[in-house]
Image (cartoon, rainbow, N blue to C red; front, side, top):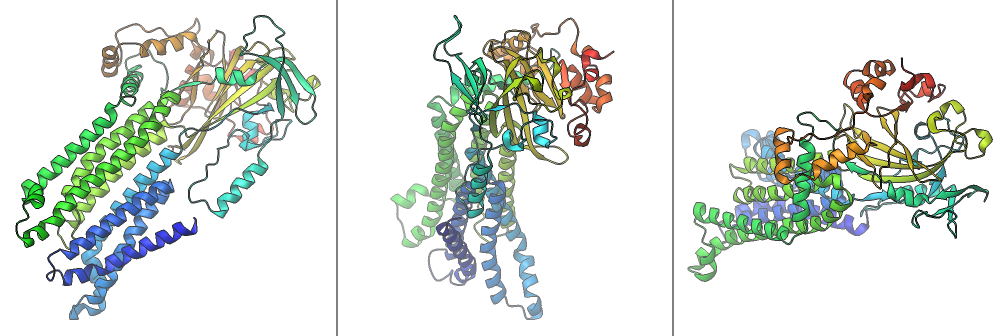
Length: 639
């Protein structure tokens, strides 16, 4: 952390400590001056602590950093208060037990206020983290000789080329505002050890084949290390990677049964509303109206409950004593309304510009956009409670209860934002391009496997060239017995000469599933992602894609009916085929390879035709010696 920021934190901490230490002095002289000195000090301490915790937690961009910031800065104030209280506390019978006596009296209030500021720091730390981590992705610029993904991750030695776990599972390192020496070295180490591209694609100056679209230009591929041309007349991989980049759906599976379209209907309704709402001027007008309503309700509350005369303080001065007594209370209410409204409107303004980009680039994450706007709406009701039940008198009987209100509300906001971010947002996208050639080592130096039994033999005859477009998606957390970060992949295997997709590959419980593409998908590849486990489910049948689009195109009333009843009343076409997929690989057969119960049934119903690592690649010891692809383990040889 830069020295000026360290100085600022230390200075603010010392100021809060002194404010806590001086609280008793202001209590002793309270009757001397007209102004309530005790409240003035506590107003100042509350304001400084709140602004400091919000600002530093947001800039820290970390849930943990926000927790620590909120807890430590509020503890500093209470440390000063407790030390001075112990000094002046007079009880001859309990002189030796004064610290325990003071802690018993003021401890509950201190604990609840520290808890409240801890959740305040957690929420704004998470908010800063969320704002900073949208659209982290690695653009497609480099090409490599193909590497088996799981062998690359677990270093099983199945690839002829050197294996790098961070070739696919890598994040674009974004330097936080509190950059330190360790982070600088980490960045330098990453740049020094990063894998360099192995292949270079060079476009041909003239098209050799009539009718080839200009965007889909052909060219030659060269080995960077030797300068040799290793392939010619292949489609530009950058064009293919853009064309077949998956459109992600946040839905678990396709189902014609009751409830099968409920979630899709809800997301489509939310999407349509957001498309209108965030692009219109009514968004800011709506939140300005909420600010006005909140302020009016707060003023009405203080006028009715406490007889506070807001207009009269400025228009009818009355006696000096009356003016001095009421002016601070009036200014507290007005300043609180302005501060809260300004803070919420600032975040709404920032989120609007960010959410417009997110709406276009991540259609599956529109529910996350909606949840953040809901948090802002909740923030107004929460602020009304805070301002009408302020914890500004340490010695008051409602001090503990008022801070518990703060803690509960900020815990709720942190929970909503955290769960929405964890379950919906994929934090990073990484894209790599690989060149794969079928055959054997005799075909040349780009054949990837050491052992021919590891190759996917269903790819066809020797010499076939494929561009393998590997798209990686990263989530900061997958909720399981032991929560952990999660990487998932979707691979599109495209014929390098014709530019037609032939296979789509994804994983399920460490098994590599291959989906055959028999139809022209046009310019769209669609995939679904499970809500928590994030398993990719490619849609490789046009009927399935059309079924999703059919539902999404329905009128709003029909979507509302589908959301409430679970169906729209229409027959929605889904591809079944002559042989259901569960007949090709039934759950009882899949159970022989380690998947049991619901996982075996789910895997059996997916529309894949081949698999690799059927026992699960997490069994590293087995697959360090056992081939990843054996014909007798494939479903087409079942029975």
